[in-house]
Structures are given as structure tokens and as C-alpha cells.
Figure 1 (cartoon, rainbow, N blue to C red):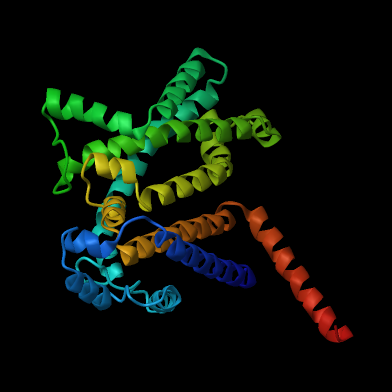
Figure 2: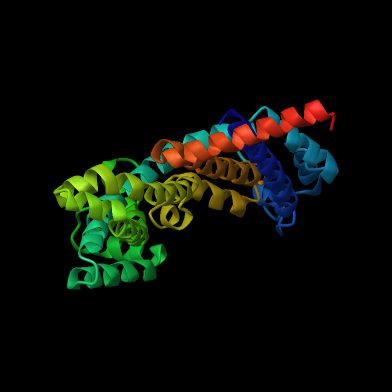
Length: 326
């Protein structure tokens, strides 16, 4: 287990370095000049040169890359070209809103998808199953940039129940969370239905029912735990996607999260902010994937045993190499 975690951490760090390098050079290919964006097109030449020097944009590209790499080590990600604050400080200022939105969206998705998915699994090939399949297909077909304005027109403009945009209070989170949660629930419903249906056809379920156990007890004590492996994986990946910036939804509802910050930074050609945000987004996504992998060992004892055998096999090989002098 220990060697597995070390290998995964090293792989995570390597991937972060590769992403950081790629994004640094790609960002500098974006058309436009950040100095012109700050001062305006009619700025004097001496002002442009002075500001370019202050922002270290006059340095050679490789020198800027070295500075960027050093900023990754101390986790500051450099300074924003527009407010002179550390990039990480700006990210942490916007991150809580994205976290709140992601949690709310996942809760809404689970409240919708788990009952529907479980019901469709137990009533497979019935009219209920058909209706759930049609509803989930319709949910997958409706994009967020269409559903968001539709909810605004209904609940904000026509009914006047909820605010149109903003991120100041609890009422403001309802529509963006519902937009993200509805589309996520469509996908989750299918995953939950497939996972539970597959478990219901296995021999251990038939044996438990033959012993006289009720359907609910079989589901609670046996089926659910095995079905959760695929469900947890899907939720983890979906949550990672939400947490790392639901850019379209945040933009539609003016929800001040890291998705909006990324769009604003691209418009301003704020190179350090763009680089830092994408590296941070990659880091969060990789960490969530890592935690999802670790959850396998808590949910599935077979994974722990197979990992133990893998580590033991590695240990025996290394020991044999030492003995034979290889």
C-alpha cells in the first residue's frame, strides 16, 4: 500500500510538471499583449516599456519559464499582472464559491439520480425503467448554457422567486446548483441503474433471497456496497469536474468562482493567473482521482488483497535481485 501511494504521488507530481510546462508555452501563444490590455491601445511607448519591465515581460521566454517554475515550488504561482497579488491568493479568494456550488450540485444530483436509478434497476424492462431512461437521455441532451437561461426565465423573470445572478447569499446558489445538478443527475442515474442491475443478477443475491432475506435487506447489506464502487468513481470524477470550474454555468449566473476568474484572466491576457489556475485545476482533479482510487480499498476487500500481493511480489523480486546481484 505504501509503495502504491508513493508511486501515485510521484506520477501526480510528474504530470503537474508536464502540464505546467505545456500551459506556460501555450499561454504565450495567445494573441494580444497584456500591457496593451492594462494601459490601453493609445498608451505612450515609454509607459509601455516601463510597465513591461515592471512586470518582467521584457525578459527572454526561457528566463520567464525559470521564474514560473520557481513560483510553483513555493506555491505562489507568481503575481497577477492586474492586481499585483499572488496568484494563489486570488485563487483562494474565488475557490470557496466554486466549492459551495460543487457540493450543492452533487447533493441535488444524488437526490434526483439515486432514487430514480435504484427504482429503474429494480423495475428493469418495465414502464418505469423506460420513463427513467427517456428522462435521463433528455437530461444529457440539454446543455448547461441552454438550461441555465431557461431556469432564469422561469424562476427569476416569470415567477420572481430567485435572483437572476450573483453569489451573495443562499438564494443565489439555487439556480446554478440546479443547472449543474440536473445535468449531472442524468448521467448518474444511468450509472446507478447499470451498477445496481448488474449486482442484482449475481448468484449471491439469488442465494440471499433463497435464504428468505427481504429485498431491502439484500440491497442494504450486499448489493449497495458492491454497486458503490462504480458509483463512487463516477461521483468523484464528476465532483472533480465541478470543483475545477463549471465555467459556463458560473459565467451564465455571474457566480464568482474560479471558472469566472479563468475567463476574466484569459480576456486580460493575465499570463500568471491563467497558468496558475490551470495548474491548480489539474492538481485538484488529479488529487480527487487519487482519493477515488484509494476509496476502492475501503469499499472492495479484493482490491486490498490484490494490492498486497502486488507489493509482496515487488518486494520478493527486489530481494531476489539483491541476492543474485542484479
